[in-house]
Each structure stands twice: as structure tokens, then as C-alpha cells.
Amino acid sequence: MASQDWFDKDFYAVLGVSKDVTPAELKKVYRKLARKYHPDSNPGDAAAESKFKEISEANSVLSDPEQRKEYDQIRAMGNGARFTAGAGGQGGGGGFEDVFGGMFGQQPGGRRSGGFSSGGGFEDIFSGMFGGGGFGQTSGGFRGNGGPTKGRDIIASTTLDFHTAIVGDTITLTQSQGKPIKVRIPQGVHDGQKIRLRGRGESSLDGGEAGDIVLTIAVRPHPVFERDGLNLRLDVPVTFTEAALGATIEVPTLGGDPVRLRVAPGTPSGRVLRVKGRGVETKEGKGDLLATVQVAVPSHLSDKAKEAVEALAAALPAENPRADLIDRARRN
Image (tube, rainbow, N blue to C red; front, side, top):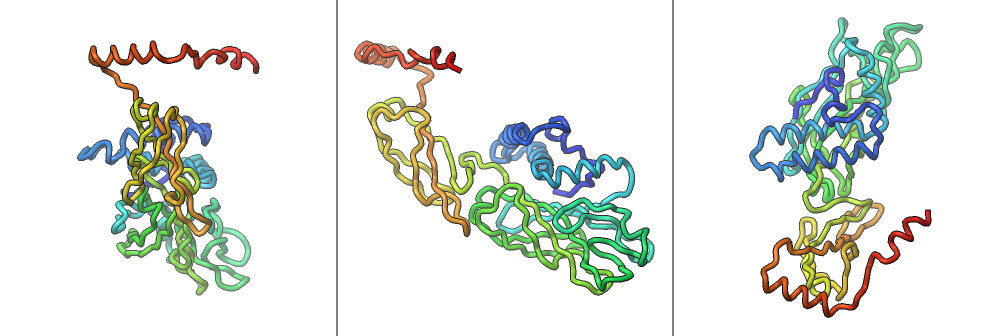
């Protein structure tokens, strides 16, 4: 996916939200759009794939408080100085795209134009053009005093498949100049996480150390699994008979063989079955797989089946599961 100049791209419009959208509302809208346009749900649909990439890029920026602040500041500058963007590339084995924003243009004399400061903070693009001591900038450029300065950081982003983010991989990014960069993605990275690649950014203009690449990770949603901290969650449909009488069922795991779980007799919808150690593994620990039972009700019954259900209803105790629902609702 080719990167775009933040001046020209309205990420709020891409997601269809207002500029004062809350993080919770943004997350809800993104998940809805991601499910709608995910390539797995639209095989062979180039338009849906392109839309998915757009909303992933927009969410990657707006869901990060620092990047969202920078984006709003840059957009507010109107048609002033520009940050140009280079071409992205795909990494092997991960099925993702990378976006290199802030590949800075040249000014007369070989000096780089404005950019972003180390760590992703917004930097005055006119810094270094005025002030004592000659040219001076916080993240690169000529300095009259104080010794050589560090080169500028490059702000970049890439989108990973859910599986790649969980298990980790070595991927290849391509800069606008066509130079490939191999990056080790550690296992368990999450959506919005930043990875700093030391010394991979802009060269110093006065003999100092090179800047870094600050890589923001966006993770595509999975059609079955959802991440919850170090745990993985999924919904598991069971039949009414399995829930009422009990059963042993198979549940998928991420990238592995299915596991067998015991559904106890009388299991209701919403009960969570836990598989220890089959969640996300990071240096902080290992999570579990949490399977939420969803009782599937038949939408069509034959006459014989209907008679059997009616006979069951007549045989069951006369219970009302909503007996105190209204009273409990009125207490607060």
C-alpha cells in the first residue's frame, strides 16, 4: 500500500467519523469496517481490499494518541510545507504492507526539510532556519555549538496479518529508494505498538549517529479470534442438545491443531471455557484461549421436531428465568 501525505489524506473521512470521535467509538467503527472489508470476507474483490488498506492506515494513526495529535497539527497547517511519502513494499511471509511517511525532501544546499522528532513527537518544520549558532534542529542538521547531532527519525507503519503479529516473523520493508530493510517482528506485538529500529533512519548531516526508524504496527482483525491482553477469545457455537445434555466438542487454536473441550450438561450461552497456555506468548508471559459458548437455536423445525420440542416444554418445570428481571432493573 503506497503511503500518503498526511496533508492530503482525511483519515476521519475514511472511517466516517467526526474529528472529536472518542477512542472507544473509533475502535467500534474500525472493527465494523474491518470485518466488512476484510479480504477473507471478500475474496478476489480488489475494491474491498483497497478499502481495507485505507481503513487500516487511518486507524493506525487515529488510534494512537500521539500520532493523532501530530496528524491533527499537520492537517491544521493547511497547504504549507509538505512531508513527502515514499513507496511501500510487502514483507515475505507476513502478508502485510508498509508505509514510509516522512521521507524528507531536499532543500538547496543538501539540507533536509522538516520532519518528526525522536519518539514520534511533532517538530516545528521551520526549526533550524532561524536562531543563533547557524542551523540547529532537535533531530538532525548543522549545529553551531554542542557537537554533532543525531540524524532524523523516520516515521513508518506496516500492517501485519493477525497470525504474524501473534507468532512473530522476520519481514522485509522497502524504502522509497528501493533499499530493503529486514525487521524482526517479535511474537505477541499488538495493534498500535511501536518498534524502534536503531540507526536505520536519516544519516546525520554533521557526523553524528544516524536516526532511527519508528515503526508503528497495525494488525488486521481475524475472522475467528480476537485478542484480549495475552488471551485469545473466540465464540463457539453449540447445539441446544449439546448444551442441555453435555458434550465433548472440538475448538480451533491459532495456527495449531484443534483441542477437545468438555461442555457440561446445562451449559448456558455466555459461559467461558478456558484452554490454558494456548493464547499469546510474550516475554511477559503466556495467555490462555477463552472459548465463549453460544447456544445455536434451530431456525427451522420439521413437524416432528416441533412436536418433540413441545413435549419437552411440557415436561420441563414451570420456571420463568425473567421473574425478577424487571425488579432488578428498577433498583438503580
